[in-house]
Amino acid sequence: MKNFEISVLDLAPVKQGKSIHDTFQDSLSLANHTENLNYKRFWLAEHHNMESIASSATSVLIGFIANGTKKIRVGSGGIMLPNHSSLIIAEQFGTLESLFPGRIDLGLGRAPGTDGLTAQALGRNPAIINEQFPRQILELQRYFSKDNSDAMVRAIPGEGLDIPLYILGSSTDSAWLAAELGLPYAFAGHFAPEQMEMAFKIYREHFEPSKYLDKPYIIACVNGVAADTSEEAHKISTTLFQAFINIVRNDRKPFAPPVDDMDEIWSPMEKSMVLQKLRYTFIGDQTEIQEKLKDFQERFQVDELMINSHIYDHQKRLRSYEIFREATGSLSKA
Image (cartoon, rainbow, N blue to C red; front, side, top):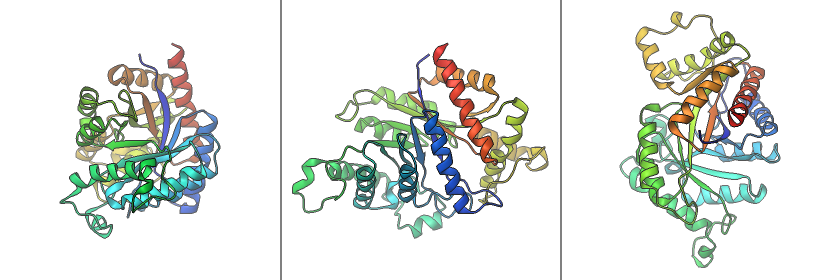
């Protein structure tokens, strides 16, 4: 089995009965905790118009987290690039890299990260997204290049900085693009598992080495809910299940505390839909988590696993990441 790194995806989840200020403090606490556990990176994701997620001003929040940590890489998983001008993102991440040298990642996606009406408010043109996204990535690479110093439009700060770009995907489209550009590829298996296996196959088979990367590099994002007992893990995972029920019902309210019986909340059809979306969700005690990680890695052979953990109780969320670190450590010694 191939060894793999372990990282964190944080959506800055807003919980019922808590403020957004509380959310940001919990995110910083989680970043400090996982830094001490030697997680590789801590990424935040851009979403808009959702009561349950507070990471809309992603670059600002990355700065907050990076300022409160010392060594863990901090970045975006991702910036939804067609929501912005390439120059603005180059300047923002150039600023972040200048403030926190060698610690900033720029993960890039093409989805809106929101509903259709809000996407319009963000100024997106869906008719040109598929040609706009690759063009914007090339623009970013140009703005970050030292060779752009003679251009009429320059990114200051940003120019000449080594800010690694990652292509994000939830379907096969971006797998082709990441392979063509020779960039690392991260897949959103935590909410869109259906095409993950095919996306990895496309990326590996069509990867073109570049000055940025000489061989494929794959990050898989999955959901993780670990606890000291299997029973507790399954109980606290009901916060995640309720969050996905809210997505199905188009009711993006703050995250709810766990419940004793999900069958009192979801219908059989909703249950089937949610479990399909959460196919790559690891729930259990350390032994169960270790076995599930082993099975996953033997199948997919990823370079890095990024854990997204929706747990209502903050201390239990911290403990979940401890258990994942312990499980991966035991696997690497096996």
